[in-house]
Image 1 (cartoon, one colour):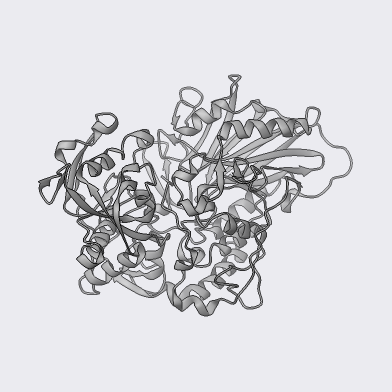
Image 2 (cartoon, rainbow, N blue to C red):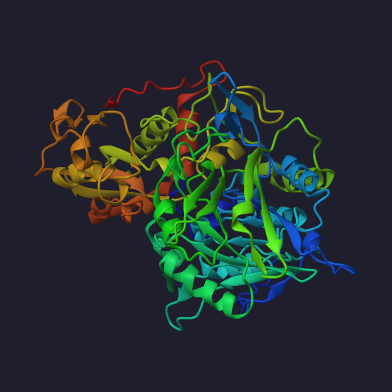
Length: 607
């Protein structure tokens, strides 16, 4: 779900209008040195007197925040909760003002409390954070007293040098400092990247692990991102880096921590699974341990050494609290807290001072909703207001009008209404001969980061789509490409939606009007795309004919498991996806004739 197009040309993000916000600053590109012990924020301090043998350590965790400082709009801002009578209720959740309150409330009465995250704290962020290269989010995480996080794939959106700046501070190398007299301080928590090394030296890019300490209690944290990160990030984002096997890496550093006397270990893994239910309170250990969850994290969990006591995971934007057996057959907690700060996980780790280890049979965990009916944290409100003031001249500019919600991120259907709008915008913008002569356009579903919501987000009025809202839908500002592909390559690309790396978790491309086909989910692999049904403007695709195909640069590079799309020739680089989206909104809507949600009749689904 979170596999998405990435961007590295950071300067595209900010329009010329924003240039006045910046003064020139310097980039601190030095990478952090080796792993160090850590006792930070609420977790630091030293005790006196008698120390009990057994101590309950509270581990609070979340993942995939993606710079969502304000509550996510529309259906993407809801969590599903199964009620006692079996019905499912949607609860609006998220926003750092509420996340801060939730975490601070949870910590009360817990002298041993540590807060950790599972990656993708930044990247694919709404305009409030994305416009400023996610400095607002790092500042918010510092205020939340985050102790440690793993890197996710999105931490590499703008490359290793920018990731180093987020860790170490310093103003942006192109846009400088955003606030007069203020230099960006960087993260006061470590980013862990145990399985990411520099190609030239073979050394870790960032710290592989950190050790949290309080009153003699020691817990090691190892952080990894998914090994497949290069497949879902642009080449420039991962240039000069190697990504290694998650299990081998964690086991290696668990042995190292064990040798150093750190027996309590938590792995932070930016990879996840899919529970059988989308309700956050679903019991995925019913009827047996881990029976209700599938996906990459299951095999990873089964391979990680028993020295590791709990796994905090992410990437799939799902909510689960499961036990999956470790290699010795003993149950071990595996958790994920959805996305966008809508949930947090509260895990109790029972620490035995005699063995310095966690009593695994006593580990308890639950996900909790970050509800919006609790008080807002005033420091987070001030932070949001401050950055909103800087963003307002760009964010509030109207781009178009809609008559109702047009769902993208919040739609679970293979064909999403907003996906159709985006693909149509790309086709229309690139169809003219001098713009590339596109005949069809493809959009990857993971690149649609939000819904277009009819209800006003500010003072613009209901139905108005602002630049900030359009940016939140398409935050990568990918350049568009138009390439030659044969009909045979087109058919292969559509089959790659449901085969190869995408077989277990299909990625259904959003297609422009005129392209139709049948998706038969009762079949398996490539056969799920019924080749004989693929038509363009009513005519069967000719395998030998050349077609002009529009897509973003990420897909044109074969990203998201679509190598056939990477075989295009005769490439023309067009405008950015966001520019085409905004141009389409302007051309197809007015205040009196707003754009209606399009029909979803391009892909016929058999289930």
